[in-house]
Image 1 (cartoon, each protein chain N blue to C red):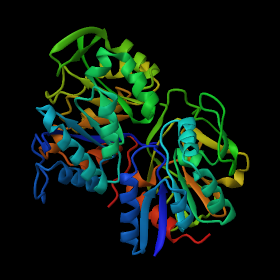
Image 2 (image 1 turned 180 degrees about the vertical axis):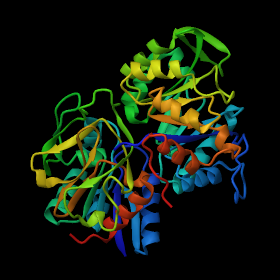
Image 3 (image 1 turned 135 degrees about the horizontal axis):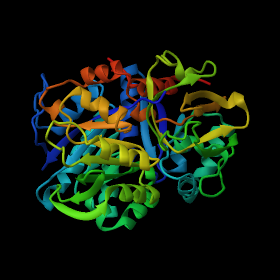
Length: 255
Length: 217
């Protein structure tokens, strides 16, 4: 039976993890590779790096981070942030990313999704959608970290990128991100039910029940969280065991 | 020292596959040299051959055929000389008679059968079949030695929308369940293929790779 996925996400800026990662026994909690190894050992199902590098010049450091991580973690790695050109995707894949997530570039140019999927295969193209509920049952895409509204209907957009060859959607509830109040379930369900490709729910996780809700009620097949793991509120194994106990099929953590 | 070649024909990055093979060999105490190459000469000199592959069937096939002499070297070393061969994901699918993704494309023809779309009986299930799933062997196979399989077994990482349907049931080594049987492993004699990615499958993957490096079919 296919298991649902739990994906910790690390924000990486200029080659360093931005938010604290509260693991014991980490020599350097700011080193993304070290954090990746810890998550790997803890039983994470995939890893996600979000590159929020401040300057273009520092982008190269991300390739090194990805390369060193891929050498040590034999699990799927998704990298996103600032991906605008086919060359950006190529460079990340060559560095060792398994999937690359495209955000703003997909909004400004839908054909970019098609070109990317044709060139590299749908299996490695994730489209990251940041959406807010603008009125009850109405969901709109926002870009630039949620500051810029686009007027684009999120459900229509999700259907479109899926038909253009996206292999997966990483859906962030922008109105919940950082609040700890849980995913926007109506949004998550609207998108997950509209497309035939897998949807990763993201944004707003504060409790383990939120993870369960994203899958059980939001119909996502994967859940992504950052803060609850970084700050040590919960451990990966604990989260997976809880989800399993609530009836979500999860891969048990292998020692 | 035993030499294993991972064939690089432009289908994705093989850095992590390379490292996974090195790690598996190291952990299992197997002395093995792992190289990544597209040279027919390296295929001829290798003791074991690995064919990876991601993306579309046709693109992978074209990539393979584009390397002068590579297909011939594979045919000779794997089919004539019987060297242990492992195909991974699309590298496994390429062993089929043909792929019917978008259009009909001939494969290597080592395993009679077609590569067809995964169609789960439950239409609400997502395609690609993406994530961790258990595998169910149809019999014994050396590559699964010592690996806990079945519903309570270890998990393998899959990401694919197509799978191989061999004409002969005996060519199916293992399946996985996705509202119906999905082919997870195929092979006979010295050839084997995994639809899942052993290089991304943590414990199960490293154990399977070590088994491949020890395999004497």
